[in-house]
Image (cartoon, rainbow, N blue to C red; front, side):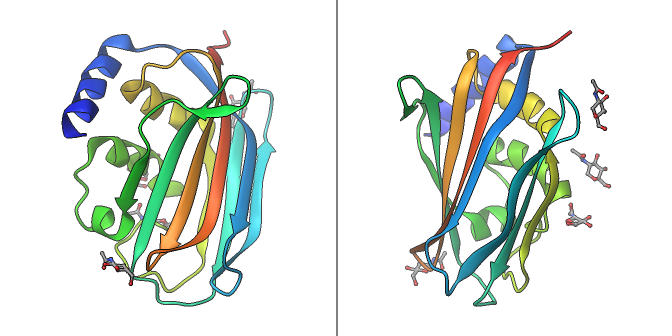
Length: 178
Ligand SMILES: *[C@@H]1O[C@H](CO)[C@@H](O)[C@H](O)[C@H]1NC(C)=O
Ligand SMILES: *[C@@H]1O[C@H](CO)[C@@H](O)[C@H](O)[C@H]1NC(C)=O
Ligand SMILES: *[C@@H]1O[C@H](CO)[C@@H](O)[C@H](O)[C@H]1NC(C)=O
Ligand SMILES: *[C@@H]1O[C@H](CO)[C@@H](O)[C@H](O)[C@H]1NC(C)=O
């Protein structure tokens, strides 16, 4: 796993593709309505090239001190199919000690737009506010040499080993618009 991640890091830094990333869809859902419900989950377009995501999750059983996130990277080819290793990680451990380079690079771009940006426990609602595509372009391309197409990241959020919610983010990667 570690060797693979470093290999991708090196490949990525050699590739440096100029790409345009746009959100095409966003799906959120609770798998345990006594634990978490979604108050907001949408994409908004500001203009032709810029879109952002807003998410608001009501956490109903706080404090939460045990979070596991599973991410599946999907590519559209007659339906969405996995094209990359699945990543499962202990979010509280990651937040305490930010060492994994891919996670860290995503965290760096996202932490200003969300209040999931401190160490556990979480005793408040979770908010992602105006998370822009522009930021993803740079982070994604640095690590994963990717061809144009439709992709999705399916994430499952567990607390205390029980799946509580999912968030699926759909994106399209195309050549940079001039
Ligand atoms: C779209 O909006 C963003 C953010 O306000 C701005 O930076 C960008 O220049 C705009 N692009 C166009 C084509 O208007
Ligand atoms: C996040 O905010 C900090 C402090 O306001 C700033 O220094 C940093 O450049 C921002 N990062 C991104 C990716 O916007
Ligand atoms: C965490 O997010 C909040 C807003 O959601 C922001 O005010 C704060 O500066 C962020 N902290 C860090 C360390 O990025
Ligand atoms: C999270 O909770 C589960 C179920 O109670 C437990 O098995 C697991 O060890 C906990 N993880 C951490 C990092 O405490």
